[in-house]
Image (tube, rainbow, N blue to C red; front, side, top):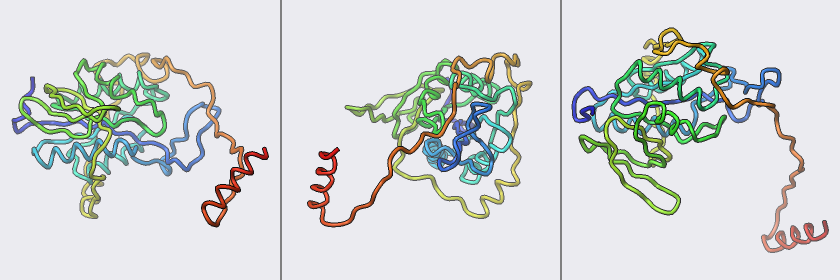
Length: 266
């Protein structure tokens, strides 16, 4: 068990670069989403996880390490994390990692976390806006053989444990996790903090650690990416808009009656 009351606490936060929601959905010939650098953002759910990690740094004085898997230009979100207060950015990047589903992605992240650890706590966002499975956090905990909590809204250090508050569907729970453990954060009352110009400039000068396949404990290519993904994408396409929306103005009661009569006439 790690000592979370010590001065060498380290928290890993997993973040992902995702396509901006307003862009074209993807390339059919590769059956992959369009992930061009100019149209990519920090996954909003991971922004919540990052802010949670930074709040723990504010209160505990621990080190926060932002970890991501992606192409070279994914370093942009790691520099964003550093500008906001993360101490280090680690990018898992290798062509072999491409086209990974959640199982292969969790394995790759687990390898990166194992090779750069140990960590007292690992924090993940609820889901990504592209894959949208919500399975990465639990899968990563399984790969690392760590206890975990989902639906987390607050994390407080109570050495030698982490006290986590969870907002479940019909009840609120509070439990204590040992160190190390993993938390999947769903909510944070405080939005992601802004970064000053000086912080942004300093982040641009800080090097990002890039780990390729050769740097991981398991360097067998078939254990990563497309080869290790049981989920196969059959088609990537933009759904057709089947309706022509109309905007109506007027008094609410009359508009409601008009809409009802239109539906009744169909």
